[in-house]
Length: 70
Image (cartoon, rainbow, N blue to C red; front, side, top):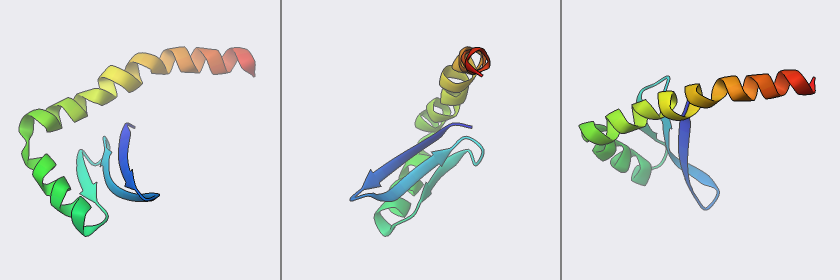
């Protein structure tokens, strides 16, 4: 799962989760921005692609590394 969170003053404002597939806002400011970001099709497709680009690319490396240390 790919998660990108945005914080302000140690409080989570917005989160993108690959399992949800969209941004979710936790404050008034976060909800407003999440709605705007969710409407941007190119930004949403880029965020959804991050799971394949970042997570799935590195999972085998991390998995092998953990097996050698245990």
